[in-house]
Length: 260
Image (cartoon, rainbow, N blue to C red; front, side, top):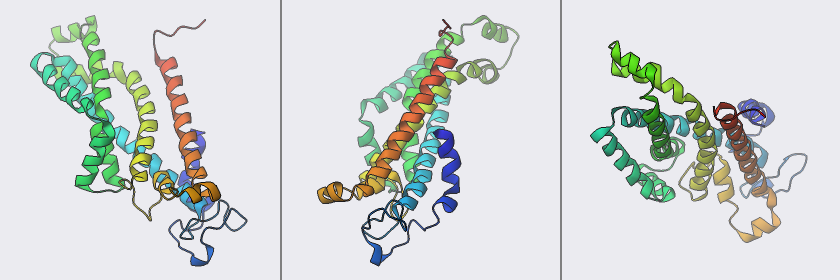
C-alpha cells in the first residue's frame, strides 16, 4: 500500500487532472459520478483531486517533520548518553519538561505564534516530537559506550566525536528506523488534527485534515459522505500501513527476535 501511495501521489497531475483549487459554482455539492469520481464539495471543487493532492501534502508533512525531530532527538540523545553527568542531567530535564505538557496544546501554542501553514506545521511537529527519540537513543548509548570496541577506540586516542559517529550511532540505526516509521504515522495524524482545527495547512491547499474540517455540519455527515469518507479512509489506510511496516521492521531488526 505504501509503495502504491509513494508511486501514485507524485503522479497527481496525471490521475487527477482537475485543479484541486478550481471552483465551479454550477457544480456545488455534486454526488460522485462520471464527471467527478468522488463528487464535489460546497465550493464546487473536485473531491478526487483534493484527496490525491492532499495526500501529497499530508505525507510530505509527516516525512519532513519526522526527519527534523529524528535529527534533533538523535543529536541530543547521543550527547546525553555519551557524556553523561551534568550534560545528561540538563538534557534529560529539558526533555522531561517538554514531555510533561500535552503535545496538542504545545502545537496549538506554537502554531498560534508562528502562524498556520505547511512549513510551519512541519516545523511545529518537528520541534515537539524529538523527546521520545532522544530518550531512546540515550538509553541505547548508555549501554553501547561500555562495549569493548568503544573502550578500544578510546585507548588508541580516537576523538570523541568520531567515536560517536563511527562506532556508536551505526549501532542505533535500527531502533531509530523503527521509531521513524511509527513517527511518520503519528505526524500524519497530528497534521490532520491541526488542519481539522484550522491551524495546519490552509485552504485552498488541500490536505486530508482540512478536508475533514469542511465536514463538521451534521447534515453534511449524513447526506454528503463523499466529503469526509475519502480523506478519512486514506488517513486510516496510510497510518495502518505505516504502522504495519513499523511492526515488521521492529521484528526484523530486533536482535532478540529468534526464528522458531
